[in-house]
Image (cartoon, rainbow, N blue to C red):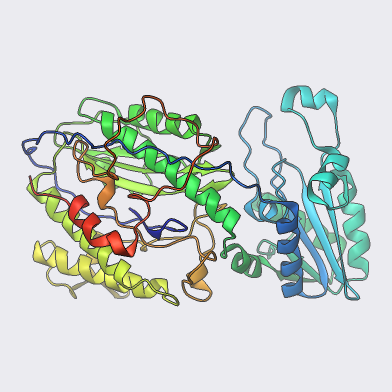
Length: 483
């Protein structure tokens, strides 16, 4: 379930719960305003400019010190008709989304130099793969002197002759000779080390992660748009989901809404599971027919401008929770509220985890699913809490260029303002049921066709952005009701 506390702060939190199937309760009439929420009208997104990318690179080199830094982009896919996804580290520092590129930077004698390497312009290949930037366009776009990719070995070897330290953005391989067992970036590093034996290699990924954890206003805007699109997809799925449909039908609708509103792609493989599939954390077969007493779990996220959302909701397929399902829902909701109450400047994930874990343990003990809140079981060489049989993972993770992005609280605790991209947000407005999902109040007729998010839109102030002054009223409006 995803939670956030203000329109410019986001955090994706996934919570697992045991959900027991039983005969479906009677269904109440649908509320006239239910599910009318639409993607808010926003101005076109402000592009992340080359000045911001340049500032990121300079801050990174300042933190690293003297030496040579290599940041490879992702390699071309095995075949030109397969999808390509750029390396998050490379995209963060350059904005380049082409395959086969690389960034090299050198700090020596108080001076920082940088070079960008991209594929050469090749009309014969571009017929198949699409237009390439080439060095001239890449330099104009980024402000970095650019060369063709085939020059990187010569340039890098020349720079390393006078350098004491070689910085890399992946874990250096322990055995450079075993190239087949390494990923692409490690292979690049291994080949460089082979040519320059004795060079000191340092992993810069932790320092880069600390920079990526602090989101700029432009990054927050892209994350916000990804979340809006994902929320819209959830609501469209809630409108149509019912027994006898197949999971892949719901997935197809969700991913259509993503594309219709300008998302690049799903941020990860969409998880749409019904019945027993709801308890498989990363289920993605999405091929079971939904039954009357089933719950339907949708763990999905859009990628917009390269930035990911990750929102999970569980609804009853027939429109109403059974008593047992409602009991578990209430435990999850209580855990989420407990975590929210601990969120403040400087708070760390562990504080939020402890609060949520306490509610989950108490709730499961109350339902006699575990012996007591502090009961344990023998899990091998140690004793493990019994509640971990039902809640076996963490409370949440950061989002950004990666769906599991570096998290600011891992470095200094959550901070107010624009430097964090993950916060807690109540699940209640995503709805306890398909027919009674509570949305922002809007008595106007819902438009018959949603406009793409890329057009002019204004920030939304409803269910996706909880303001302190409205929290109590919204909780009354969106709280789950017993059937």
